Image (cartoon, rainbow over all chains, first blue to last red; front, side, top):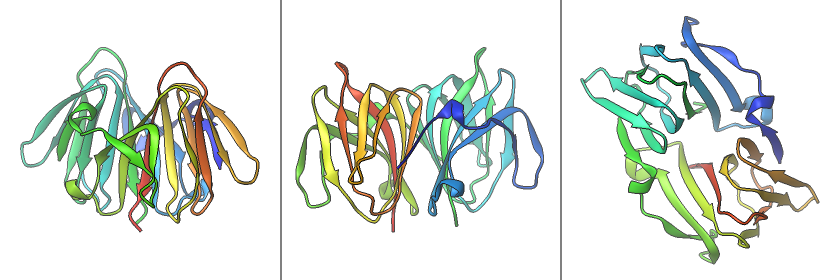
Length: 116
Length: 116
């Protein structure tokens, strides 16, 4: 068993899979391969007011739990979902998705991703 | 993309894998196979004051994020970890683990589990 606090984990500049930096977005890989996790990882994201994640896709799905904030999650089929604390999102494999922080506060969420 | 609030998901009596009911513990399967998730599921647990989960094990690992409360997570090697909001736990495959809610309030946490 490994225990840590999210603050013990280094906060890093978020990047897309091609290495592009996502301005105003930081990520902590709370539990990942370095902890021995083989199947999936758990991350905690912070998105500054006015910032977001551009539309992008990948074969990994996401399971998201909103801890704080007010944001729009959207995809490339025109679906837009407004989320707040306690909301949950499932983004299937290969569905292109993006995020906009709509609030005056940080958007904070847990986002899991599988190791495929 | 599927969006819901955790409150939209039915809260069920928690059980161990052998079907034993775990008194005072409820679970919402926030994202699971019914949503199309193939690799892992995200659950949200509530443990009443004085309640807990007895020591048990299984091949699936757990990635846990504490949302609220004060509790002890323990295993069968004598390791005990006191956790509070913002703490994170990784419980490896087959490591027997148990939980005691130590607080006067509900213990609430996110717990992911893979589909093996």
